[in-house]
Length: 286
Image 1 (cartoon, rainbow, N blue to C red):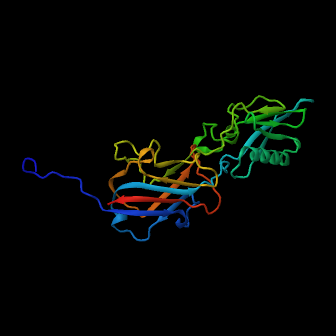
Image 2: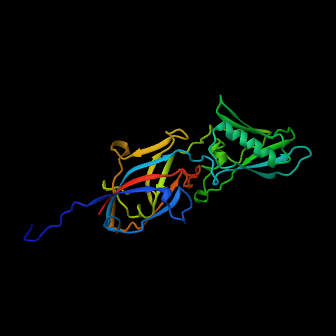
Image 3: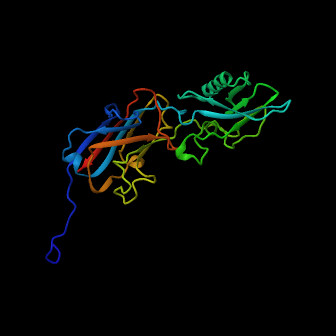
């Protein structure tokens, strides 16, 4: 009591656990990294959510470091004598996970098969200098590595494009019969960024009074570069650097359908081996 009137105190919420398995995604879902979960019946635990705590995230690291969004290497080639025009060519690598040696082999194989003028072109990765080199395979042809930007969400950036990830950080390159990347490659996906417009609304805040994310609808980021390809990624909110604050809603949130997108550091929706499901747990307070 204060001056004869009652004060409003925060109540203790009821809590329930929500377990998410991407295998249960709706028929309209795109993939296990871009999906929705629909709950058939909505009880109090799902219709009057005041606060949400992200408890765990588990998946297998079977995500492609070359996806359909960044699998094109753009080139120009030009005949030296007699002088000819610069001719564009594109090497499209099948989406998959590649180490540097395998990526070089695939680029060489695909390039030779699809650029008739350069049947002997080469792509190699030097395990001493850790750099890629492309050659025309013909002393009478110059090469130029061109910028190709397919990830539309980051159209003003070269980062994340295939040539950039291979270490060609300054594009277009100088023309030459042999071109070596100036930088070492960056082929690994650094983090998984989990977005949800339902769970991480623009006005979502954490209990430490900080914004829930620096990007709209970003719910959580989980390190991926510390887990070997094929191994299990298992994130638990157990305090310390892993601890995440609660998402608090200004009005009751109804979780009848929840959407998720798993993206890389450039905003591309991740692609993966088939049937690589995602498992998440949340504690809802209502």
